[in-house]
Length: 109
Image (tube, rainbow, N blue to C red):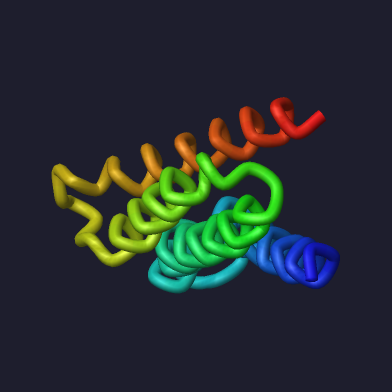
């Protein structure tokens, strides 16, 4: 089960990176670039964090809910208007998820 979840998370993460790169290199019109790099990227990262949280139930259960919270911040932030003062929550979710991921992996060794 863990290998399947890792494969799914890997595919989702690669898709997220592709979305970010396409948006940065402005390969499409501005509205599509914005959607890919500022919305779809964070949605995919949030899904990736949910999958990773599921994997943490097997290895390090104390990080499961913080990972789900980071995922929620990413997804909720992706749907906020671009000019919203709360738009920063998606970045907080992203950074939180990355930090949780590193901490949980270092404690697993």
